[in-house]
Length: 148
Image 1: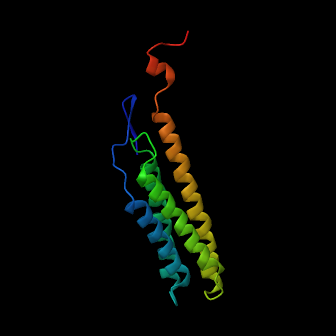
Image 2: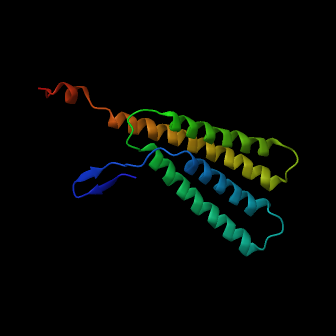
Image 3: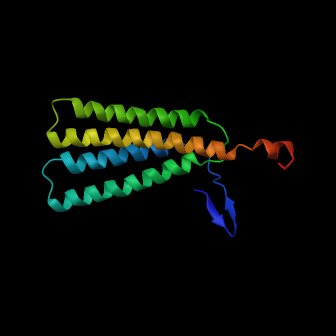
C-alpha cells in the first residue's frame, strides 16, 4: 500500500500478482467452512477457526487494496484474471448454497461467501479503476500550461 513519507505520497512499487488475492480468498472461505461444517468441533475450536477466518478476511481486503493500487497506469491481464477468479469463487460458493445436500449452516455460509466474494470483486474493480484514474495525467499537466 502506498505510504506517506514526510509530506509526499510514496506509490506502491509491487508488481501484479494473481495467486495472493485468489489464495487468500480460498483460504478465508475454507477456514470459515471448516469452522461451520467441519464436524464435531469443540466450542473453542469453532471460535478459533472463526477468528482465524476473520483475520484472513482482513488480510484479503488489504491484499485487494495493494493489488488495486499498483503503479501500472492501465488495466492489465493480471487485473482481469483477479476479477474473473473472484467472480468464479462467488459462483462456486453460490453453487454450495443452492445444493440441497449440505447442511443448513454450510448452505448459509455459502450464501454469505457468495455475497462476500461478489463484494470483493466489485471492490477490486472500483479501487483499480480509481487508481488508474488518479495515475493518468491531467490535460493541463500534459500541455504544460496552467489554467488562468
